[in-house]
Amino acid sequence: MKEVYELDVYRLAEELSDLIWFAYDTWDSKAQQTLGQQVIRAVDSVAANIAEGYGRYTPADRKKFYLYARGSFEETKCWLRKAFRRKVISPAEVATYKRLIDELGPKLNAFIKATHLD
Image 1 (cartoon, rainbow, N blue to C red):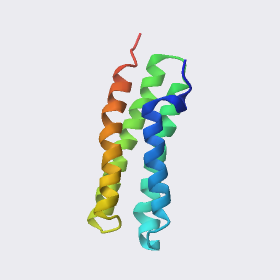
Image 2: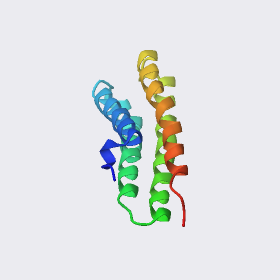
Image 3: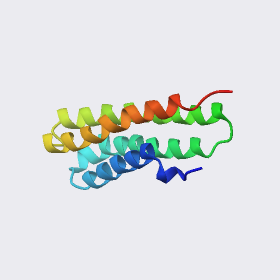
Image 4: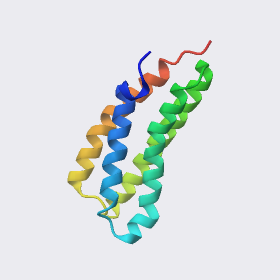
C-alpha cells in the first residue's frame, strides 16, 4: 500500500494549502484575522482528513473522513471567493488556485467513490 503522501489527491491538497499559507503573510491584518485564519484551517483540513481517513481500518470509517475532506475543500473555495471579491487575492493568484482546485476536486471525488463500503 502506498504512503498517503504518495497519493496525487493528497499531494494536490498539500500544494494548495502551502500556497495559501504563504500568501497569508502578504495580507493585511484585517484579512489575516478574519478570512485568512478561516481559509487556512479549511484548506489544511483537506489533506489532514485524507490522511486520517487513509489511516483508518474500515472502508466506512475511511469514507467518513474523505467526505469531511470534501466539505473542507468546498469551504476553502468559499473563503477564496470571498478573498477575491474583497480584493485580498489577485486574479493571478486566483488562476493559480483554480488550476489546483480544478485538478483536486475531481480526484477527491474519484478517491471517495473508490472507497467501497462492505
